[in-house]
Length: 432
Image 1: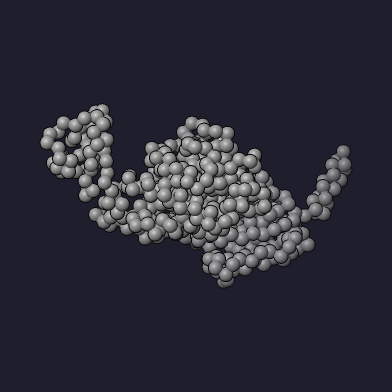
Image 2: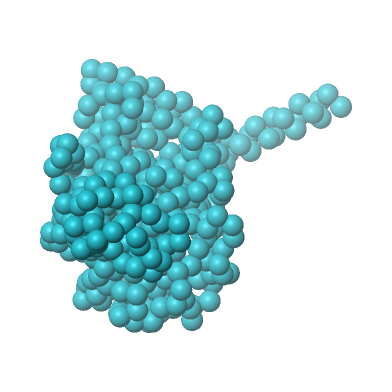
């Protein structure tokens, strides 16, 4: 028996040696604050990473592996990676060398197969500082100074995560980036409004990072832009979504949310059990958001989209989208069209149609913020705000709410007494 057992072990070992793991492809995605190198592999591998200096480089040794094709090379603008080299370390093992432009922090992990890819080995390069850098613009927060309304525009997917794919092969990640850039340009031409793009190129951003960028810019609204797919290619039309605290409002909403929430797994996030914050963002569907404002903005944006063409649902939809779960930034998700519908895929390719979609979203945003601009913004200074008296309201409580004196409120509305009635509309001074 012992001899048979040893023979079996030797046979299995020889079989493994005879069938090395193949590195089928190498992809490189350069973002503003990191570079990701992805190896498509035919099976799980044992690997070892070592960082060396003089010059800076990362040495990757992969046991029992072969590289099928020459590795891809980084773009000249890549912040961290200079060149990728490879050679056999010995008859069985592959060595890949990542020549760096500067010192970098490295992280590697393996990802199992999913609906988009097979096995993958992922290496991330970050700033050598302890925390990855987040690119931000200067923000005017001088006490007493009026500021712009800040809108975070989030083009869905990117890099390793292509999103949905149309019948002709068009990727969602490319189309929504084009629409988002058009929308951002339009917003930046509006007085009192400023746009921030969560991504400006073809690279992967985890859902949590998208929300972090919006928070870092102190965004007043987060708008995630998509052009998703559905299992029935006949489905078409635009939709606007908010976060659901309970369940999805339709089968399509549930299906879309499941696809979008899988973006981190497709794009390559290391779901480390010690990363409690990430786990809560991805998996805790009970987290609440600033829903009152989100609902109102979503209604206005949906009304704007109706002027462009068919909408999938005539009311705002809701589902458990992880990317909408920032508790302190009101958020909406816009499905511009269904890329799985051949007719809508053709429209999405058209630059003029993209402009119409972006313009209709802007119209909805303009309609909302012209009426409900945040305190301390340029738009609020020029808005004649209204307050409709509700049951239980008092003049003193209203004055306190808008941080003005009762006398100023009386004078502005020509009130002779403090008596008010339900349904009465008060004008709020713009200097309040």
